Image 1 (tube, helix red, strand yellow):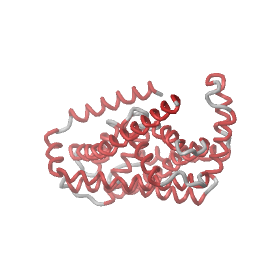
Image 2 (cartoon, one colour):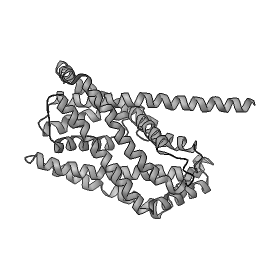
Image 3 (spheres, one colour):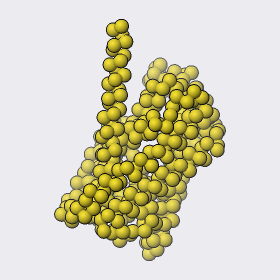
Image 4 (cartoon, helix red, strand yellow):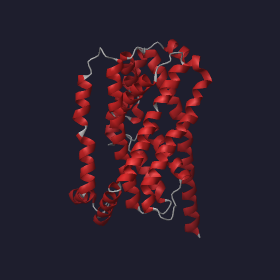
Length: 328
């Protein structure tokens, strides 16, 4: 996975360099200058996205946290840290979930319940992303009536069984117990049989709480749709206002491309290429599309750096406390 991440990152950087070489950098600078400091309004708005995801995660874990040790404020912080890790670090968009399990274990929650909540949340995000992509495709066909989108729709429909099969296997199968038996000769006791079986039971229990899953799915879909406002606002600040439908298409298609190329760290180059390609179909020039991508990157950095620093500070405090306790 690490080797694949390095390869993906290298390809992403090369793609980004190619886009920059063919771009009009002075025009991009002028576009960003048009918006100026107003772009920073994108930063506090992102808090709503994190809040929806944190509240959904809290709802998933509540049946296993009867003592209410996992609260909304802590969930919001962990959500921001997970997003920062996935967006800014070379972890192929999966490192945030691993760190999320670790941080929730600090609250004394059972590992199977925590792991199951992360897995279920990721699956729900995948389903919400499919719904958001479907909405984007419908709006794209309406806005770009002269384009031939049959190939996009074909590949989208071809991939739909992926979340469905994953859901069924986790809900009715013993996926992790089987994986433990299969890989036991190579991983030894890293994953014990009873631990894998406990994780399978926690997953089946979580996936059986249908009304909770429906609410969390709705919250995640709302969070994804809310991300289109960033595109809408950025283009408005750049002097190129668009309608909500155009903003949703740009956001949904860009997210779809990033999910497909999840192995590329931070979606570098992929996000920019997605915005440029979809932007062309909607009458948005490459320079303007790259300016929108830079605005989104700015928001990621402003949120991500403090989140990563706070995580390292918290890890340092726990390490120091453990050392003091061992000396005592």
